[in-house]
Image (cartoon, rainbow, N blue to C red):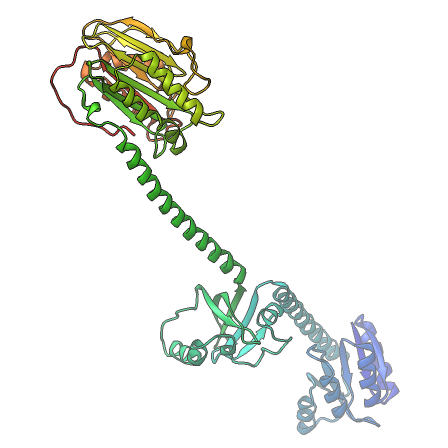
Length: 519
């Protein structure tokens, strides 16, 4: 540390220099008050030893000027004078001195005083350094930080707060914080504070809330505010941390608008899909599906099924049945397979051969479907008296013939291309003739059934399907298969449409039953 010695007597200056040297302190000297002020401003000493009776400028005035020149940094000033009257001591301390020593001074007392001043100075500098770090942190924080007293008067504001509200450095200090709030909160702000001071609810203290702020130019903007209350020297101090959330609010509003648009789009799509489903369902001959020989289920992967299950009897009593599986699933697949319906019913009403039925449906799809779209199908016709059937399979799993015990007796594999791939040829449309026995059933199913991936990651599989058919009563096999598939999926969505059609081979007996949805 460096000590400034201000004394017009050279002997006193020399003695102080010796004392300070013994204490390990550096020293500089001034011969009068004016010289002391100039030396202080030039050298910035750590401690000042001030004589009172000096020419040019006395110690009282020099002390006042040095104290005024410190600009917030404390420099201890110790007066050393032969004047020992109480009035002189009081005047010296009132001028700004921190201590008063009466000459002559013993080295022991002087050394103790210097040690005391050094400790106080170290403490003050430590506190100042700590405050400086806190201030630096506050200045560097990107959020605005504002402190107010219990009357709402701003005591401090960091640069981020000034920039956020559009004020110059220091312009907020001394202002009422209500200038940063819009109406009607601005007019009611003082009343809020008064109510809280009188024991009212905290409302905003201790919480983080979204509010509106007002910039210096009158512009309103959204901000996030958190307020903390402190008690310092028995007085309340409020610390507000503010963040401009204009961008966050903008993004949030955009998301809300997008969500609203998506919801409207979803609702419109749902209405359109429901209309499409009703139109498609209306094209199914529901009465024909009441034939007691027909058992079926259709489980779509989405709202629409690309699988089509249809059956109808011709005027001669021949029973026609078809399970069609269009490429993909959902509405696009359902649209692909829908043109088949009017052709199927029209040709069944004409009692045409199965080969012609296949040929005309294939030509229709070949002309109407885009490249890459086709329809796999299993189509059959059973003679009116039973005993025989024509079966055509293209692009779907093999048709199964199961006995009365549910065991598979025959498989009719796919030997043809799916419908719509190429133009019809006689060879590609000819069905296979099979013999049937009383009590047997013909099973048609889409690959979505056997390829359904369950919760365990495994496919349902053909073996399991055959086991289910063999274990269930004759009239409950479709229901058992449907329940087994539901258990296998265990709540997860199927990746493809699943459909199963089972046809009894016996001749039609007079009976009716309830209808299930086909699409």
